[in-house]
Length: 366
Image 1 (tube, one colour):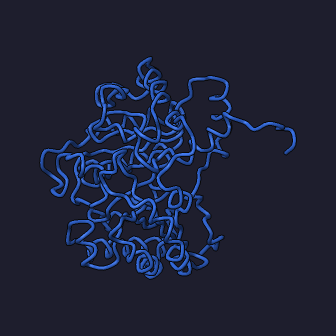
Image 2 (spheres, helix red, strand yellow):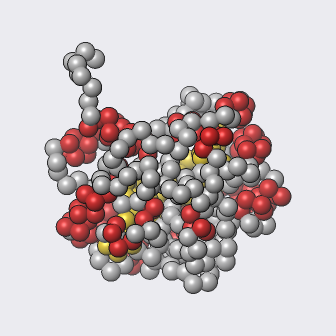
């Protein structure tokens, strides 16, 4: 197996905009650029009710049930959106959103189409519905597959995720790790933990669990909270736990990385830039087809920030529409520290773009 620098070879505690400078330069020139990436949901429901989830606090239908009052995006809309996204210049799509996307009955069809057109796809999942019998499809259609797990024991899992599926999730992960090793599939497999006030004690055990399972990485991130702190994310406490993060990193090996997102864990939930430009490069699509600048607006001030619906309108038409660009402009008027979620999806990109838009004096003295 390939060895790597165990500090953060996937650059998870940062961004990758430096490798997309063609798009960045076009944006700097005032061009209307297509997003580089989409976080796309294909269902609005979930079979868990995790204590740190935006969907739970916003009372979205289906949470904890997986099948009541939810919307599954139709196959035709998924296929069309994948194809048109690639055509207009989107370079990757993460199947990730407010729901557990493996619940959509067209999930595997979507992966097959993405593989067929050469679309760079990733998947974030709670792991319950992963089907080891479809390992070949999962591990060849996806560039990466990440299982979100925030507890390392059965009891803690039930407390945090509100289900009894701990062993089932671990069995599915083990099966995919075996399949990858046996067939040399290229997909990167990882675990992700969301840290809350009630699971600091699970950080080190999860780091060890990830190594024992044989995945490629384990990433530790803070809870993204609402502007009014509805999830009670312990931002100040995050910054006091450096010893725990360092202990977790000791479980890294040449083939397994433990990556605390230190930049976010240490920022006290505060953004050090005034304007959000990141949504021009990363947008979000809900499982009901609604396209927004980011997932924060899925159920908040939706009329202001809804850019279109990919079930009703082809994605390419949405991106080319005046409405899309009006909303993107409107985002720049938002107070990022009092109207947005903390440690948002665009955070690292925004830090980069803010510096780029506000260069220091004496630029030639490199």
